[in-house]
Each structure stands twice: as structure tokens, then as C-alpha cells.
Amino acid sequence: MSSKRRFIFTVKQITRYLKALFAQDRTLQEVWVRGEVADITAHRSGHVYFTLQDESSRLRVVLFREYAEELNFVPAAGEQVVAGGAITIYEPRGQYQLIATSLERAGVGDLHLAFERLRRKLAEEGLFAEERKRPLPRFPRRIAVLTSPAGAALHDILTTLRRRWPSAEVVLIPIPVSGSQAAPGIVRGLRLLGKIEGVDAAILARGGGAAEELAGFDNEEVARAIAASPVPLVTGIGHESDITIADLVADRRAATPTAAAAAASPDRIELLGAVRVLACRVPRALKRRAERSRREFSLLAARPFLRSPRLLLADRRQRADEFAASIRREVFRAVSEARARLAALSDRLAALSPRAVLARGYAIVRLPDTGEVVRSVRQLKVREPAEVVLYEGAADVVVTKLREAKE
Image (tube, rainbow, N blue to C red; front, top):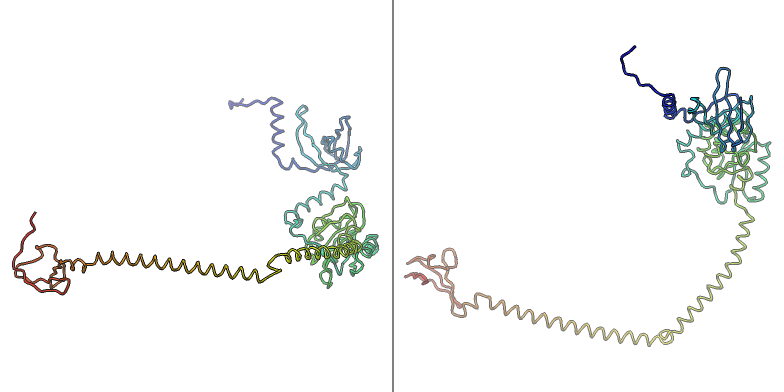
């Protein structure tokens, strides 16, 4: 017996541990399982319990009421189905099971899985983004119709276009709309669309049918050809509840071929009605405008200056004279003030001038060689020359005696 310390689980603990591991596995949280229905029980709560089995294994499945109510068929024992959901463990029995959120017959289930894979791929590439979709032309001149020439969809489209917008030219591009040749035929038709001149809108359509019959419109090459269409394209594929990959890529999706034709064309009857309404409204609007203009003119004509323009001119001339006089007064006042300030500044400047000081009897002594002003006897020497600057003239002198200032 190993001496290593063991951790001993209870049954509940190990079951919860395994359940937690299942919950962490992303693959087990979104899984699709195909099998044969067995041991099916519809509980009075609305939940459905059954087993999926194949030749060697069995898997318990729970379909809760909110999902069971969404089914468009009643599963029966022996029927091949595809169930989608999450794998988990039912703790009271320690049994793993599938909590189903989707259930389809096996054939339809394969198509749905392929549809979902392609839808996610193209969505990640941005082929379904609204910002890349173009508006249909308001008044199309040439409309291309891609559909089977033998189908009822063509009759419905032509009837709708003739009724709504007969001035548009219709160009038929025949394509297969079901079977193995549908997808390549649709791609060829869409490529041909770019070679026809003058087309400004296109309709891709077919009548209703089973999911298998619409498979050609859930094709990746078809989706990319629609995205590359040189003109805005509207789809009308199947019945109202049918949504294909082609619908998601198209510039606009209509529920039926008839609705697609209506989306691609304006209604001439509605337009004529709108024109008639405008034809009635415009004269009334013009009449109201004329009446309003007459009232405004009458109000303006009643103003004094319009009755006697000379009075208005005289008033303006008088105001101009008063304004000119006011300007002259302001200019005169400003000039007088400037002259007074200039005189005051001149007096101050004159008082500070060295010549004014000299005029009062003072003199300036400078050294003759450097022109330096003498402020102290220490700058002078006996028997040395000096220059004395007076108010009127200057004199060259020789220093004979120096006296220090007394304290």
C-alpha cells in the first residue's frame, strides 16, 4: 500500500467534479448529436425525455418545455433526428445526458448544420454587414430578373412590375433554381449580370419549396457572387419564413418574389396620386404666398418714409449734420487737450534742462582731455588745466588751489 496521502471523494463530490469538467469543455457546451429516438416520454410538465441511440451506444436527452413547444414536428420512436445542446451530468443518477435546445429531423439537421457553419463564416467576413449594402434605385430603368423561366416566380414578378412600373425594361437571365446545378447556374447568371449594359437593379427569385430545394441559395460561391454584384440586388426566395444565405448577403431581402418586385420598383399609381395631391396643393400654396406678400407690401407701403421719402432723407441729412458737428467738437477738444499736455511737458523738460541750471549762474567743470564732468576736487590737480562751461560760452582755466568741502 502506497504511503502517499490519498484524497477520498464522496460520490456526490466526484459527480460534481465531473459535472464541472463537462461545463468547462466548450465543445460539450454546443454539440450536435445524430441518432435514433427511443424510450420517448412526454411528461405532463411539458418536458420531453428520450434516448438517442445508434448500433452501439445510447445517450439520454432532455428537451425542456420551452424548446419542445418550438418544434414543428412531434418526434417519434425510431425516427432519425439531430439534437443540439450541452452535455452535462444529472447528479442524482451520476448519468451524463444531453440538455437539448434544438431538435430536427436528420435530413433537415444536416442542412441546418451546414447553413449555420456558412452563416458564421460569412458573418465574420462582414458579408452581412448593413454598411456594405446599397440602396435600390428610386426609379429603375432596366431591371434584371434571375429566375427559372418556367417557374411561377417569373409570372408573379412580371405581373407586379407591369402593374407598378411599366416603364422599366425587364431583362430575364434564366437560371436553375433547384437541384445540383442550381448553385453553379446562379453564379453564372450573376456573372452575366455584369456584362449587360444599362441594368441598375436586379431580382434573384424562386418560388417556395422544401429546405432541400433551396439548398442552391445556401451556397458559398453564390453568396460571394451576390456580394460582387455590380448593381443593387433584392432577393425573393421561397416563402416568407424561408431565409437563405443569399437573403443575408443581398442588398435587400423580400419575403416572396412578388414582394421582391415591389421592393425593386416604385408604384406608379401612388406616384400619380402624389402628383395629383401636389397639383392641388401648389396653386393653394401659391395663392397663400401671394396673399401674404400683398399684406406685407401693404404694411410697408403704410410706413411714413415710403409715403414721403423726402422726409426720411431730410431726417437722415439733419442727423448727418449733427454727427459732423459733434465730430468737429470732439476733434477740437482732443487737439486742445493735446496742446495743453505738450506745453506742460515742454515746461517740465525745460526745467530739467542743464541750460536752465546754467542760466541761474551755475557752471559745469570738465576735464579737457576726457570731457568727464568734475564732481569732486579729488579729480583735479594744481597747475592742471580744466574747462568751465557757462550758460553763454566756456573758459579754459588752470587750477591754482584746491579746497576740500567742509563737513
